[in-house]
Image (cartoon, rainbow, N blue to C red):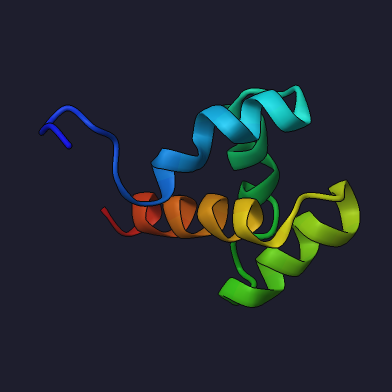
Length: 70
């Protein structure tokens, strides 16, 4: 593994874009609308509303929440 290797939630982004056919920015925008909810409520929102798998939903939520904190 090199220093240029993407780690953490962002490592899922290429797979998320390929699997669901939308850019990560689209999914982050969806999460903006439910930013007041708890982590697992946001995960459930992506899973039930858009059919996103748990791992992908969790990665998107973790990234979105970290970005909001920073």
